[in-house]
Length: 402
Ligand code: SF4
Image (cartoon, rainbow, N blue to C red):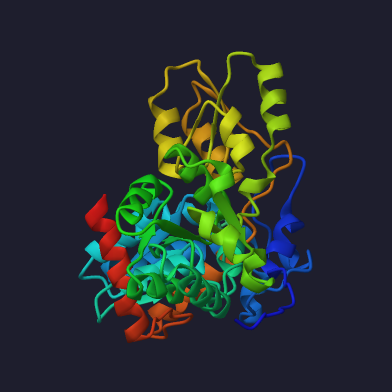
């Protein structure tokens, strides 16, 4: 086995994460030109859209959306800004939105206000006559950017070699990954998961192989392993910049779970100290966090689950209850506004939206809707047929499990 040395790189999306962090809760959109002044590197678009003021964009989007009628649906991920989410025909988590898109057989255009891997999944699940549009092509996901397909293929080859004679390994990829990685899972007996069905897919994988490779979020993988009784010392983190992920063959042979070294820049901001502070201020507060948080945070929270879980748990809670929430702030603010009879606060006192979701500024939505009305499909997301077919296998396996 030849040792591979690589240069570590930090995704630009990770570097940009703090560009829009504020110490107050004012996240209202400015003109795109003003937001560009934070030094971000977003997709360029015609200059007239850069200068439009928020109200002008609002009116323009409303009129373009009305003109498109049933030809288009607009999907809004929970983490989108309010100025975008108000135009969404449906809001939800990534898989719920893709399933909805797949059920809308008659519309021609699916405008996905989310990030790149979500639009790819919608494209895989959509019909041939449908076109999927991502308003800003630089709206990626820092976690997905931490797993490049070439590095994952190298890792897979190494693991295949090590485990050839000791029970094999099944790859599981979180929905937050590129279509190429979903395809790798599809062609190697693996499966896709979401944050709500990760435990079920782990069980499925461990019935078919002795070990699991979990991509790309080490925290969701570790928290899920712990939920199923796997000890932290039975899980190793694979560093793609070190030969054999930084481990000896003996260490790898003893492991039950290999966790890709990726994380969410938003959810790893939450700390045990923030939970202690929330409980000091409000002794009767309930702490609910997303499983992309670290295992230490998940361990001391009262409960954890997907964005849909967090949202529905708070909605169903009695009036007067108090909630400190460890997930993306745009969603936390929206849950707070929609549940005025409860106290709902973000665990992190510094307001940090997901910087890549935040890239869907209203100017981009206006631009792509105007294009569709003129018969021009701007920013179409497509997936090569072979990759789409293999990724579908992994997605279908997930649907058969849950
Ligand atoms: S919240 Fe985290 S995982 Fe979700 S899109 Fe943003 S960076 Fe990616």
